[in-house]
Each structure stands twice: as C-alpha cells, then as structure tokens.
Length: 514
Image (cartoon, rainbow, N blue to C red; front, side):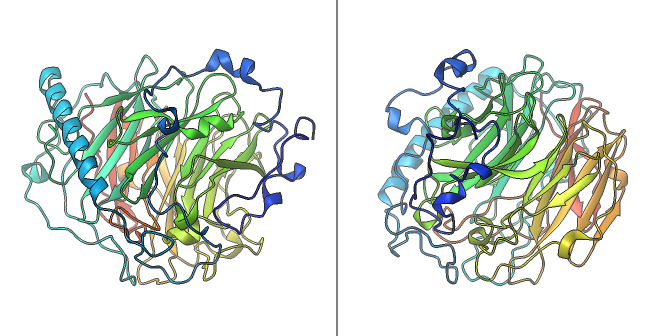
C-alpha cells in the first residue's frame, strides 16, 4: 500500500514465533500505517507532548538497564515455568535493590510532606483480606499474606460530594498487582474538568504514605499528558525483575489522530513521563477506543479497524522500547467501546499468539468477542482455550454506539493449564449488565449492585498483572477470583468500587477521591 514501501521488519531478540514478515507484509498493515511518510515530524509537531523527563536521554523511557534482558532470545515454545530471573539461569544482583530502596525512601518522604501540607480528604473504601492463590505452580508468587486488622474494614462508607479530581463522565481505567507478600497495589486513573489525568493509588501493605481518612487510598497525583475532552484511557501493568515493581502503562487518545502513552514507575525520578510507544507514531481516530493488557494494546485506526500493538519482548520476556503493529481485520464504528483480556493465567502463554481476547461492538451494533490469530498455528505449547469453542452460544446483545465496555479475567480454579474465566460488563441506559464464562458456555446477568449508575459513566475493571519473572524473580500468574476482582464506575458523579463475589457483586462502595 502507498507509503509503506520504505519500511521493512527486522528480526529482533524476543519471541521467535513472530516471523519477520509478520509485521512487514503490506497486507498486514493498516491503510493509515503509523510509519506512513505522510505523518512526518512536521505533522506531529503541533501535537507534541510537553517535556516530562530530564537527564540521560537513553533513560527517558525507563527501559534503560533491564536485568536478564541479554542472552539468548526467549523461544516461542518454552518448556516448564522456572523460577529463574535470567535467560542463562543466573540470579539478579542484589546491590541495585539497595539503591532503589534508598531512592524510593526519599520519594516516600517527599510524598508524605506534600500530603501533610496539602491536606487530606475523608471517604469510603473498605479494607479486606488477602485473596486466594492460583493452583498448581510451585513457583507461583501469588501467595496469601497475613490478614491485618483495619478499623476501616468495619466502618460504614461516608457519603461523598462530587469530587474535584474526577469530572462527570470521566474516562476510567485501572491496573493492579499482588506483591509476593500478598499485598495489593492498584492505580485508578481519571480525568478532571480541565482534562488533566490523575491516578489514585490503593495499597494495603505497610507503608509510610499518608492515606485518605484511614483508608488505603492516597491523594490523587497528576500525570503529564496531552489528553483532550474526548480522551479514552487504558492502563496495564508491567511486573518484571527489580526495575518494574511495578510500572504502569497508560495509553490514551490525545491530540489529533494520535495514540499516546505515559508510564508511572514510583522508582523513577520523576515517577511518570512519556512512554516509548510514542516513538511508533500510532495514527488513530480522534477519541479512539483503547484497551490493553501487557504486552498487548489495541486501538481504532482512522478507517475503524482494530489494530494490534505488541511490545517486542526481549529474552526472558523482558520489556523493550520497541513496538510492533498490525491490523486485525476487525472493523468497528467510531465511538465504539472495546475491552481486552488475557486468555491465559500464565504469562508465557498469553504473551504470544492467541494470548488475548477482544470484546467490542461490531459494525452491526452487536456485542462481539474474538481471539485474534488463534488458529494461526503459532500458539505456545500447551495452550488451552479458555472461551467456549467458536463462541457459538455468545448471546446477541445490541449495544449503544458510545456505551462503555469493560472486562477482566481471573484464573480458573483447579486448572493447571492456565485457563481463565472472563467477565464482561457493558452499560445499557443506567444499568450495567454482565456476560461471563467459567468454562463451557456464556451466561448473562443483571446484578443489583450495578444498577442506577450515571448515564455517561465509564467502566473500568482490573485484571491483575502477571509476569514470567516477577519482582522476586519467580513466575507470577493471574490469581483466582477474590478481593481484587474489582470494577469501577460513577454514580452521582462519585467513583464507585464493586467486588465480584462468585458470579454476583458486593454492594458498591465510594472511592475517596477528593
């Protein structure tokens, strides 16, 4: 196609299942491929982000030195999971961790001072027990931590007025993980009336950070972005070695025809800034839908095609600053919602072909699901399908053009193959409905806890982070359903949190965003 003649793919260290022609064949490219010479530096200059980093340019994207990234590339069909951090079997150096802890301690002190000066705000999220663990992996890091006694656990939620850091109808997205100790950290992103993007952080472990009215939530922190009024957000999370513990990736539609990204890593100074995905110059519809689960992301091209973006992982599945993109052949209308979920609880299986599922509104206005490239013959050894075969019984559901769609996956109980259960939420009027599968079929429900939400509410759900080499060097699977199976939406302008309980939902609680 026009504009693509001078671009070619080159083999890179990483997953050798991805052949060179995978991303260089003309038929795989969008009509508006981001590398089209039409979209040169002068085109992007009016939409450039403000500078957010200082110091060594090599480290501006926070992918500088990654332990274990060297050595032989990770193959497409790895053997049994191991607890090794490095591809060559070596252990990570411990000296760098001390340095990071010192830097982290200094940052924590600054945050405490800022919180005291700025003042705190009361609110109503409740603490709870640690979740269950995933079955069948000696190296699984999703261990159950000790239960703590928290006065907030028995407190009644406080009624909140409309918050100043969340505008009515704000886009919402959230990402989180469980630490090896069993603690939970969640980053919830939202937009205020000036289009600024903020994150509110939840952490239920031991911390010196000041929290809001005794809850586990901290004061919102602004992230420098080029977000607009019609911006949509998608957050996902990298857990890898000592560098990414964790790093949150936030992708969004910003400026004219741009898909952009920022990352948040509390070990960095400053903790947030532009992401390397911006080098890919992704061209999208204004206000494009966007969804992500690391290392994948999807958005809408100018022609309405859903695009697949994948981080070109290095050896040992380490993050890189290089990205690949191709069209998926799925067409959606402008303004349609889309959600992405991992199709395996095991990172090495979901980071390659068949690794993610999409939920979207198709061009006929009906809710649809797909697992792209599942039958290409390049899935990981031992790959097991999580969704019903061919999704033949997926219900026919009409969805409004601008209706939000969200979804998350949890590990299937007693399933050593790593299958997942998937829960899909979509808004119809002022009620959120659910479609879900826990094995052989798709089911529907209309939970009472998800009714009477704001008509312009967005929906955000969390699939917890997974890793081939977690923060302690061991594999980390997506956990079973539990206390962290959470979704968020607005009711009366206030962000609400709901927790899945079996196949029903507990009563919503207000998130204390001031």
